[in-house]
Length: 281
Image 1 (cartoon, helix red, strand yellow):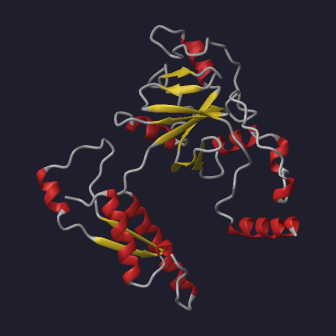
Image 2: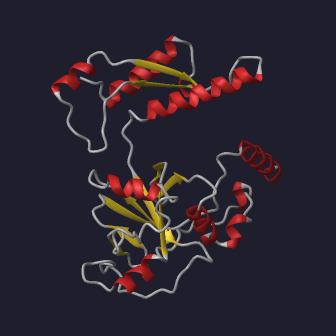
Image 3: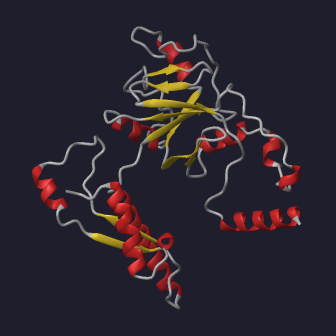
């Protein structure tokens, strides 16, 4: 039997300690066989779990002196990390929002909550409405806080239409905010419930095709309008008029609380910390 989550966490800490390695500097995992539909392991799978392999990936900078050595090490690390994460169960989510400015088509309104592309609906209405929306499969999604109000985080590859769309929805003042000393922090006030900027759709096991569709904008530039399926992806409208994919486990109607953080640019965090230090001092 594969180790439980609690046992797995204890083994991770213990294994890293015996190697005198900071657990935050390594990734350790038990080889597991997990599938998108969360199927129950068969007898042969249980037998394979009995001798699960252990893998340790060092994320520290390569120690080689040559540039080619470092590049080769980093390339291998990326491949190993991808292979490792494929064996870890994670939620699959699709974010849906409006098209970026300049790509909007004329919009035909529908009552909130109505099925946006039900059988028998006019093709022109469906196509006009669907062209207003866009979606993208998220490469990562997690809940990071419950108090003082629920906050989730996710990552998008840039450049992308979804990233452009969400960035344009952030209030202009949000991008120019500066951190102030704690004594000058204004009283907390939660963001308004409406309007929402996007919907996070947590897909079910039967929605593998939707995950693929929204992950390939090159093949499906308008996922709500498919030439082979005039009705496009089935969805309903939230009270804010955003598409909620039908068949999903659940959906979160979300509002952005700040500008995006460029995770690919480590200098961004260094510059931000320096500015914060100056402001506080």
